[in-house]
Image: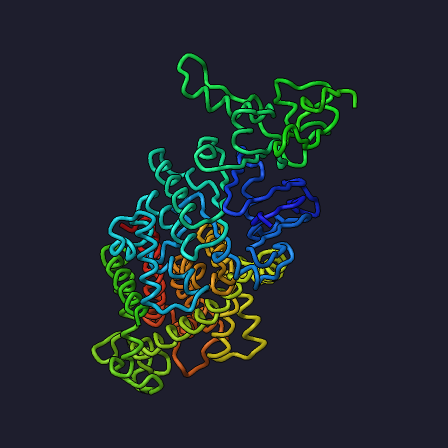
Amino acid sequence: MDNILEVKNLNIDIVENKSTKSLVENVSFNVKRKGSLGIVGESGCGKSITAMSIMQLLSHPLKATKGKIIFNDGSKSIDMREANSNIMRKIRGKEISMIFQEPMTALDPLFTIEEQIAEVLKFHTDLKKVEMKKLVLEMLTKVGIPQPQRIMKNYPHQLSGGMLQRVVISMALILNPKLIIADEPTTALDVTIQAQILELINDLRSSYDTSIIMITHDLGVIAETCEDVIVFYAGQIVEEGNIMDIFHNTSHPYTKGLINAVRSLGDKETELFTIPGTVPVAGEFSKGCRFAERCGEAMAICREKEPELMEISPGHNTRCWLYNGGDTNV
Amino acid sequence: MDWFKTLIKEIAKVIKGLLKDKVGRIGLIGVLIVIVLALGAPMIATHDVTEMFAKSKLKPPSGDFLFGTDDFGRDVFSRIIFGARVSLKVGIISVGISATSGFILGILAGYYEGKTDGIIMGIMDVLFAFPSILLALFIVSVLGPNLTNTMIAIGIVSTPVFTRTVRASVISVKSMEYITSAKSIGLSSIRIILKHVAPNILAPFTVQATLALSSAILTEASLSFLGLGIQPPNPSWGSMLSDSRKYMELAPWLAIAPSAFIIGTILSFNLLGDSLRDVLDPKFKL
């Protein structure tokens, strides 16, 4: 099997007062071994909770209700949804680890950098204190922290956001996990630091042979780091393919809109391109295509019937009636 | 012993912060005075608390009897000093009871939410619905009036406040990314609670404990005033105040001395708590 992670027909619901709303519907995707998958979408489209569900970190009222999440580390495959908490705890941090969005809050303010990184080692290994310290020091050097000897004695509030994100990355990588889930790792950082962090992630990924899932709303980040891309809209995958498909052979009007929005940024003559309207609220989707209300190319059928995800070229799928062979009378 | 050193260092930092603040300074000094009085009571007191001087009943303050004497001819000053022992003991033990149970219940309710939360907070809301003195009265009259039962009653009565404070802080800490991060590196719930949740809610908890101490002392005084707390001839500020009513016009010092001490002690603890809140607030650090 050359996929490290296979997600099949995943559904995530929010259960409140006995009413159930579906937040993520029928999502399937694979992460290739040593591959990099980008998940892109607006805020609230379900991309972060999809990532959390891989680690089984969803808490009440969110729940993964259907589907399979199969993690295959080469020797054995585990369905994460059925794994008990003991197995899960051994996987977390060791086999799969996460990089968080807000480095400022991702570290406990009461412990030093060294203590927090060593905590991962303490739980997953039997190393002695001295060895742990050596490893922490090594890791901090690898992520490009100057004077790691001094920095590791510092508390989180004494470091800048970019430095903290490096610490978080070193925490995620110290046990050499097989898969990293990066949930908007650069969103809270300023642009110059963003570039450095992305470069760091790219470098470390190739030297550690790790797979990565990069969750972001920034197509620029996707372009920098990913080989495969899935585009989320309102809890569904609307387009998936490799990076060339997505950027040069864009098919779904939503993806086109996202790309236009980024492209118009550099153009002083034209106004910033935006996709009109807002994301529909979960539980209030119309019977047709979820994007129809905001779509410039919407046809009659788009408001009547929901399109399926269909293949338009090998490996490139899209959820849009425009590509259904012109058959609009269904 | 590394954590012990850090603890000492932290405590020293807090005390330094308290001394910098005018309100904190007054509170700290007041509390220290009460502690010294209670610990050194046998040395400070000028007479035996139960010794009756038949010839000098209801005498006004003088050189021999600093705060005068009561209707049995006992020295009020000595009784006040020994009363500080009772107050402090009741305060510390009953707050110990309520703080411990409130801490555990609050963490369970806040961390696990759902049904656990519903059951715990339901019980706490029922306890909260009673006026605290009424509930304490009820518990003491069921268990029987003595010092131990008074402390148990006050402990039960002030548990809901702790549970609520702790639960609210746990819920806010729980939503922080470092808790998700701790989960994502594979730590168990117990370890997350002990290592990352509990230390992070210690500040509001400490403040609550200081404030609860003063209300526990007040409740003990009220219970003793009503005759359900400390039983005579043992001295307690509340019972002394209660006994003074009969001679209010004849010997006002009997009422003034215990009142002044109750007010002073409670004010000191409240000021200390107030200042502690500022000192422990991370926004005021750096």
